[in-house]
Length: 360
Length: 231
Image (cartoon, rainbow over all chains, first blue to last red; front, side, top):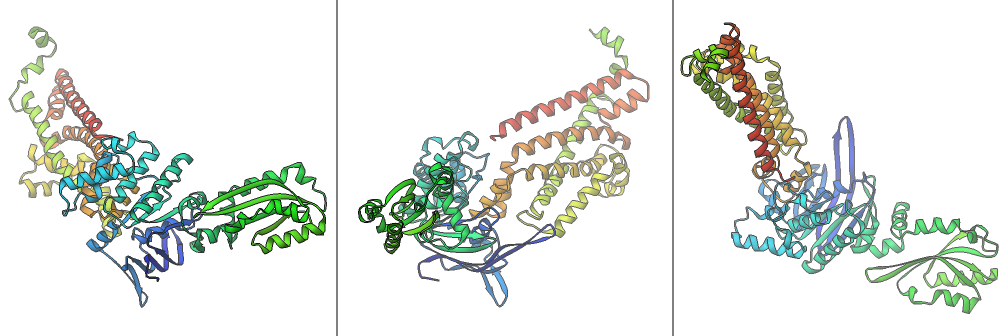
């Protein structure tokens, strides 16, 4: 574990009995999350990501493995015996880990202000005034000062999630776990909530663990990503690494969905200009990241090789301030020129995928 | 007016107010039996109802053996018809209140008769609290006590008031049967005077009073439940 790690999971196994079936929800997962990270964990439902993040605050006890949060062992396996933090020690550790949920989980019979107050209601180091000030500050932070006396049933989904975020921050946690927090919200509200999380990360230095089945959400705010399938992390790394150089098919699928490449590709393939493609013309996909994007790719193809590029689909994302782009083009020109051009483009660090046609 | 009553309800008037079987006595007995056994049965029912939720497999104190024991006790008591329970537990009644007959003796079977019904209702009300809300409270470091009193009790309050109303109403029904062990009350007047002496007018008035009593409980319960709910 590196020195900056705020959360360190080692060889986590989670098995439980459901009816007469043994479910192996998490298989030998090790993961280090550094202070200040927004760590996205992506996977389809049933991949074990919810179970995995619940291990961090011991809402789910791991069958075996070590959980370190701020260097405090919440669970530890030594000599095949797993021990867990208990009682007030566990409760104090949990207070440093905020959590928000897909269905908000607000208490329906308490007002917005009372919900936010709940985690610190029994904190004896704060006076009543200090608590009230804190609640007011938190509601201002999430932009809901005017609804403090409303009940959750009177709020919209996005507002409920904002209250939940304020509540999760009440005990000054260093970590915020977001369990599919935007999955029940519409796209516009999702973006607003993600922007709020991002600003909390920047303002408070909050470490965020974000689990979701939408790569889109991760793409917008995370700096690191892990992809989960069948209880295992199949791939993880920085957002840029994962997006520009995915290794596993599932990761590629998630990225294609997020960049709408899949959709674009299907539409492009159906166009007459593609179905009637004549040799030596070819349909190719260019993928590039970072500095390469600065090169005038399309115009140099024409100037240097006399190749005409017909752009059918394009997408440029800015990930962690680095542009990442995809272009689908038809290249027309002499077959030899096309070959040389593609070779040189590859040399410049652009990934080239031949989608249709042959290089003669 | 009085002539009208004397003509159509002769036996109602002659029963009097504060005699052994008088109306005042009967009303008092019914109220007493209902509320005192609601108190004891209510405490037992709440304890068992909470136990059935907290010790259940996915409860916050999950414990299979304890759950199994609580569950079986409730099921067994629910299975015994009340009229039989009255006789069946008379040794226990003797032990607890030192008599087997009368209004005080009826409190024991009434409490024990109503608690399993109430326990199941409490269990249902508590189970309807979204498990996510409980999980959130745990995630914020709430103690078991806080989860019971500040989350379960508060979130389920409106439902608990509703099921308490239903239970109280069925308890009034049970007090009518307690006449079998000499408890008195409106039900007893309806049967042992109205029915056994062929004085139908007494039965009618006793029934009417019970209906009024039940409507009052229902009305109060609905009002309180509505006030408590913000869902």
